[in-house]
Length: 512
Image (cartoon, rainbow, N blue to C red):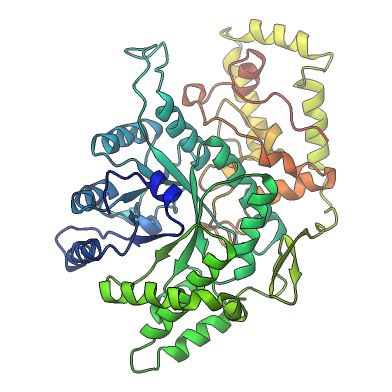
């Protein structure tokens, strides 16, 4: 394979694309790194994969930056896909890293929110998440067109030359509740509109969920290459995933027991793990995916070759294999009706659950907003004139203390200065989302619980969905795209900023 051939051209020209995920460790001086390099050299000589992807501090642990390994892979003739996450960098560092990747000729990116930071030097690292995956894709798209510097910065007003990035995104279709499923797909719509050019799924073992994603994209009229995440599941990994250690990936007790039984064989389950992955690869190709993204596989070129060969052998009878891949919890939500003859889906939406009840707080907040902050309110113009007089006066600091004392009690306010409460059903994502996300949930929630605080804090976006559902308004979350926080407004009055037009937010909550 030639590196000069962009990944976009590979996706256009090949009938079925196969990529392989590499996970760097914390050092380049260990046996693991030498195994990665040896594996990359061997598969390059055999031409086994169309691209190798490199994770970015996978699992929230510090590791070698993907740029360094990507440079070496590029020199071997591989096409590297650089995972680019939001967890460890603010927006300035993100821009610097993107410019460095451009200098190295590493233009294919897999943009993702990223796992919450975990163990690091002398304790847990500070989570950053200054941008989310939607705003990061928007930024990359602007750099593709030519980034125009703001007038107030040094060299402001200058338009930088376009950079030929080719960004992709991820989606987790393996969600088992109505709210989490729809929220994942709606966020995917926003990612594609923000500039994602290809999609890679989370890994899972339920064919109906794989097909569900394709049905949804087709129904939305979104034509984009989609690669199915395929996991080579050995006993060690199965036990980790069953405990819920890896955010966003779930396997059932039944599947764990099956893998445990396989591990008792002479090869400790190696052949069965490859066989399961090969069958799922064949099924996904039969369903219509444009490729697969292999994860968790051993760094063994012979095993990789065996996996690809088995998949090709299974392809002619992929439909016969469907009953083996129905791993989902009892009572799981599916967006489309089941076809009992095939075990797949019919392209017909299921009815959503009845409207949920909610407390009195949301209607009261909505009423207060319409009285004091809606441009259609008769009080809006007088309040705006009053805010202009109050701003920069001696009374401003007392007004600020009053505002945040009230909002701290009601919303656990973080004093952002550019409030998004009206758009978020009066639930604050800055205080109630561990990753401070403004454009939809991450893929790590499980059964409606936050990945960082399982069993203690419900995902704020699930709660937002439930609050909006009685009015049939959660669907606006598919189209809403909020800009990142403006830290110049931190600890200033969000009310005064609103009336003075300093906040680039929609001024109204969604209409019924």
